[in-house]
Amino acid sequence: MHNAPTPDPGSAGRRSERDLEILASIGRKLLGGVDLDQQLGLTLRLAADAVGANRASVMLLDDDSRTLAIRCSVGLPPEAILGTVALGEGIAGWVAEHNQPFILHGAVTDSRFEGVDPTIDSSLCLPLAVEGRVLGVLNLTRQPGNRFTVEDLRLASSLADLASLAVEKAHLYATLREREERVSGLLEAAINAQEAERRRIADEMHDGFLQALTGLFLQTEIAKATLGQGGTAEAMAALDSVQNAILHTSDELRDVVWGARPAPVDELGLAPTLEAMVEEVCSACEVQGHFVNRTGDERLPGAVETVLYRVAQEALRNAVKHADASQVWVALERGEGEARLSVRDDGRGVEPDVVLDDRGSASLATIQERLALAGGRVRIDPSPEGGTTISATIPLGGFR
Image (cartoon, rainbow, N blue to C red; front, side, top):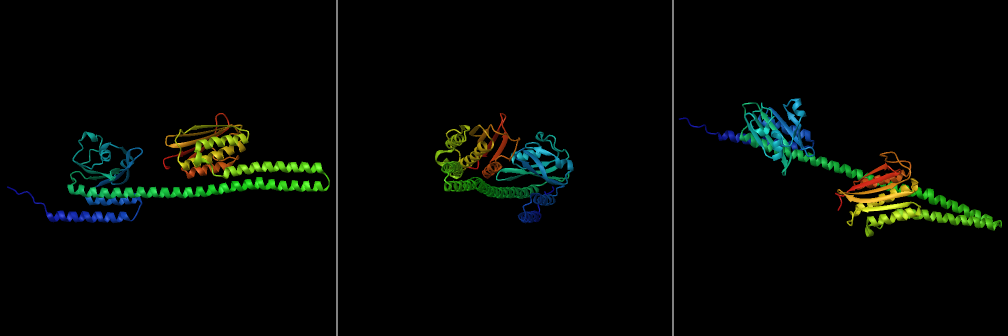
């Protein structure tokens, strides 16, 4: 009778000690960087050496296409690296779909894995997951006849956990960088919007009021000189001209004050305020105005209402002052998680997809910058019936 071989406790202890050293080494190296490819490559090489794998790969899951693609590999042919695997397809797809490890001993006979390389004899496939969310899979394969053990599976599972943390850290770092760039871009847009508004007001003051005041001064000089020469009728005509100029300048000043004063959006809501604005502006400019509200009774978030009011203000100003429009249509609507505003006129049109044009380019640039600050977008297109349509959209997900 032959006694069964007794496991060597010293060998098991040495294996555990070696595995702990490997994990500690990988953990220390992963702490030092954020480059995903570098960290996954390092983890993969050490994992392949630790378990004696001749082929190894890390596949990452694309959430949009729900497919796995190899991000880094050891010992794989080029044609294998370029392929993708659908979620649930093959061993790797099954592991990713079920978030469970899979160990293969011998030829592939499971009907679920038809089409898998039949030469695979011993393979480990482990999910890369953080808090139950699958990020990808780790694949390790040995030469035929050299099968993985339970200890190999235990070590590979710990290595997969480290690889998961590396992927998650890289994703978080990329997200942080993207947000930093977005904040920087929004800050720049805010500064540009402020400067554009200041330039617009300065231009209106210089081209309108200062020139008008200079003309008034000259008219009063003429009136004084005429009175000094006894020309009463001529002096009265000059004074009438001064009065007319004062009325015209007052109207222009009222327009500037109307554009700069805080809108009553907070008290009345956006829809009633827009309706009143369309009526006021169009009546003053002898333009026929139309307003449609499709938002219902529920109000939009305060910041969205403010931005859309200012956008409507600029677009309406552009239509009545620069486009030579006879009619203007303003529509406000809400749906599919976003708020939409359109301002259409029947004046001079623009080229498709134009961003800025000669008429009112400063105000169109201001519209773009205001929407960028709110995460929105704008389209400026020719209308099929003639004229121009300015369409502004703001997603509501980031607002309360």
